[in-house]
Length: 142
Image (tube, rainbow, N blue to C red; front, top):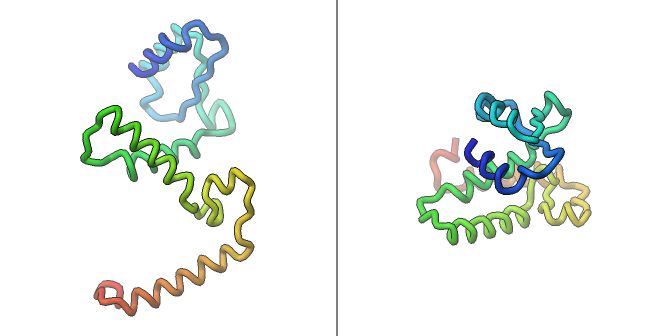
């Protein structure tokens, strides 16, 4: 709530037609709704007031939070800025299953996935099982 107030005062107070798209979570109700009645911000709830959502962005944020940002390191602004830059670079250049093996940057550049991507994934799964059974790990030899 404090973040919203600060952003409003610094950037949005003199703007018209500002939309705030939220999910239905409890953090977006109550005091947030009360505050918004004193502003020029219109709140829309994803998949309730509008048909789309920001779930794709939320998924990336969650991935960044749990894979990169939750470390025992010092949370200085300089450290966090560098870590964020590294995590974005890593995320954008890592193949994703939802993109049929393409990286986000490759998908953005309209590259086409391998036509037999699904079969390659199935073959890799079979190979992984064989490799695991031939390892020295007793849990893998079931």
